[in-house]
Length: 324
Image (cartoon, rainbow, N blue to C red):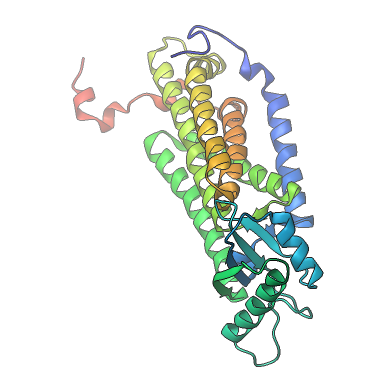
């Protein structure tokens, strides 16, 4: 299946200066957002208390929030748990507030019990059919460890991809892939920071998945670049790179389109617990697809990739060395 003509010749590399400048500006803006606004870390990272509540009859999320507000419980995060009769209430820890803070020497379990009891009292005041399913406490120290482990995991994934591409292709391809992966990750995080979407474990998993998805697109283009360089008698790098993008454009767009449809279905039918994952993947798909077309190949051209770099080395290959 092809959306674009296999022989099309859209001059993507002709716009490389504009595309690289836009990519650099997006990266700078994303770093600025992360430094000034930061990420809206969820309960998984900040610690706090979560309470699951079931109702006998249908409940509106707005009514739950109203009952908690009237009881003086500030800034609760209320989510539906895949239906209209079960909700998850999450409370961030506060230094001087009531929810999740606790008194000096008070244990985490006792704090969780106390907060869960106040939440249930507030809800039963409005709806007596509210029943607590469970409650749990997440320590802030656990959140700090998750931030550290998540950052290390992302760095290792990017470095691992760079090493793989260096071995499979050539040094310039690894550098181009690393730069675009950093771009894709920063821009995705920048968008999350801009809209202040809650950053929880599902979003962290999605960011790592975005890195893998994005590199898959670029490997396809890189494979075609190597193939065309080896086939061409006189290889003009800009022409080869442009031709590679055009011949893989249908595959790139179709893959992105169907992955995007899958994520949209996950968002609409998967329940609120996977909203963060689906939204982050959608952002990453758009960013990764655009960078495969407008960023990775211009960087390769800037690094000076040539036909000579991609030809098999006969001295290291006895079979080729024996050929006349």
